Each structure stands twice: as C-alpha cells, then as structure tokens.
Length: 463
Image 1: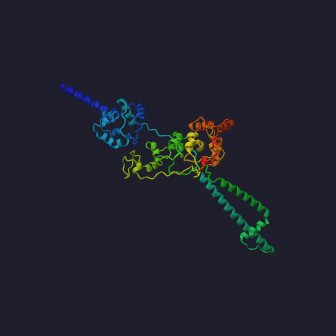
Image 2: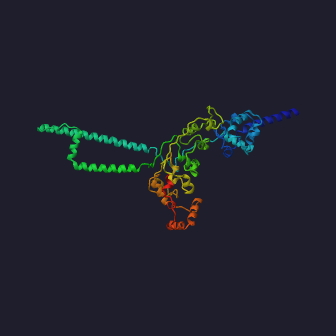
Image 3: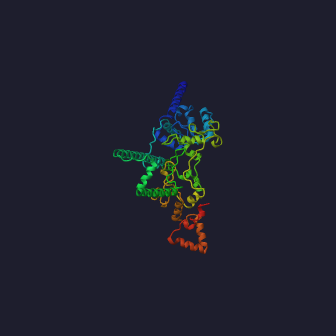
C-alpha cells in the first residue's frame, strides 16, 4: 500500500512538473501579457532577437535551461536567482550587468509571468505602417540648386544655338547676294572677317543697336545691383549633410523639442550642434529608421563606436567591451555642414533671445518640424506661420540680414514685467528724472520696443 502511494505521488509530481514546463510558455493570456510586457519589460527587452538594454527575448523558451521556478525567481529577484549558480543566468550576468547594471526586480506574480511568456512566445506580427498623411509635410530644398543649374544650362544652349543660326543665316544671305551680283554683273561683296561685317551692320542700323545697347546696359546694372545686394543673403540655403537627419520625423512625428538637441540655446551664444552622445540617448534603442532603415543610423554607430547587434560599445581593439567609447574607440566624428552662419563681426546670443526675449525657434528658423535637413527659411515663409505660431513678427527684409534684425527690433514689443532683466531696466528708468521722461515717451504708443531700449545701438550687435 505504501509503495502504491509512493508511485502515485511520484506520478503526480512528474505530471505537475511537465504541466508547469508547458504552461509557463503556453496557455497564458497573450493580450494581458502584452500589456504587462509593455509596462514592465519593454524599456529593456524586445520580443525580437535585437538587443536593447538586455537580450532580445525571441527564442527564450529554447535558451532557458533552468526550471520555471527559477525563471520566476529571476524576474522577481534577479540577484537571488544569480546566487543559485545557474550557468545560463551566470552568462547573462557576465554579459550584461557590467554595461547596464542589474535588472530591477519586477513586481509581477507567477501567473502574470506566465502571461508575459505567452506573449513573448506568440508576439503579434504587426508591420509598422509608413505615415502617408499630411500631418507632417516635409519641405526639401535639396533639388533647388539642381533646378537653377539646369535653367542656366538650357539658357546657354539656346544662346549658342541662336548664335549659330544667326551666323548661318548671315552666310546664306551673303552667298545669295553674291549670286545675284554675279548674274547682274555687279561687284561681289568683299571677303571681310565677321567682326568687320558686324561693325558695318551696326553703323547702318545705329538706332536699333543703340536701343538694344541701352537695354542690355540697364539689365546689367539691375542684375549687378541685385547681385551685390544678395551678398550674404542665403534664403532657402539647404546644404547636404553626412547623415540624412529628417527634422520632420524627429520634431513633428516624434515631437522632440528643438532644445533637447540644441540645448545650449538656453545658456550660450550658440544653439550648438548635438554631439553623437545625444543621438545615442534614443538610438541606442531605436536601431532602424522608418524611411532610411539602418543606413543612416549606422553612421551614428560608426562615429561613436557602437555595436547594435550586441548593444555594447566597441573598445580600441575593435572588440566588444565596456569602456567609454570617447576614450578608446578611434572613430571619425560626424562632420555636419553649418547652415546658419553670421559674419565674424556680428554678435548674436541665442540665450538672450530665447531666455530674455522669449522668442520661439520658429521666429528665425521657420517651421523646422516640416524640414528634411536644416535650411534657411525665406522671410515670406516665416510670415505665413503667424496663425500657427502667434508670437512671430511679420518682417519684410531677407532672413539673416542686418535689415531683418533692425526691423525686428523696431517691431518687437517688450513686457517690462516679464523677467528680471527687463524689470531691472524698468527700475533704472524710474529712478531718475530723465529716465521717467524717457519711459513716458516710450509709452506714448502704449508699447516699448527693443529699439527704444537700445536695440539699435551699433555696439549691441557689432564688435
């Protein structure tokens, strides 16, 4: 009887063990598992074989050689599970803890872990759809230079063609005239060079030539003046970049604030070009772009020395390691081409305009969230954004010119109580008799502009 009981309990234990081995991966609620995975696991794991901050979970059922109880313990208390000495857990600790630290203990029950494993074993096969809506339209000036050069080429070809036709017609006319003269017994035309014939024709048609000459002189003066006035004016300029960074994807679709990447705009003269480390804050996890796939993001990895397959940085010998990449990996920095470039004798502070003046990026740069690569927005394009961005001041001078800055300083209103900088200027005006007189004069039109507080002084902007 005792023997039968022993066998019975052994069979029950074996059946329970088999049932447990199956149900930890199967039979769970996949939908609930997806919610639990997104809430507890998605920041470090992917359900594919890609490495994020921890190994991808695809095929985990085949790799996990320990018991289900140890899996539950590993998720609920990783360090305690590691103390068991399990070989697979030890390999995970050796591989990832040095770089990412210990996994946080997850407050999930054994049943919830079962649901998570069911989702991991059967993830939904959902392809990311490309956004074809007009929510984030993209402005791309990359082909503007090609269009301009193509127009010049066609104009040149047509000019050469008409010149050839004119010379040919002149030669045919001369031959016909000689034939007629020969038949009538008259003297043939002298065999003179084209330049001599042209001078002779010009003297015979002096009025027509004079009108044409005046027209071309006027055209030359007009074009020359426009060219001189266009020196330093680069509206629409959009240089190519070593990495095809799409502002529309980052700033519009993903709603990344401009100052996240250009953070020194708050505290420096320059807005700054983000370092590769800033890019890696997101692209350590995001390894494939919606439009360019892995092609452009791989250039970031090459510059900083990151292996996306293992999720680790590369040491100086080209092997996977845990050293700081800037101190070891000899990569090539990303050589961005500057878009906005003021003359050396001009002083402009982003901090003063952003922090004190309270300007939006769109005041000067246009609707960056619709750009592909960086570009200089034409002033007409910026003016059209007034309904979308109410703080924009309507201007008429070309962007980044002195007239553009002066016009803005003449129109921009100031609230003397908006921040400490203007409050101090207000207090200074009120403490003297002359200051009070100036303040009353400034407020005659019920507003104070940057110009009235010294915004037109030469030394404000010029060294």
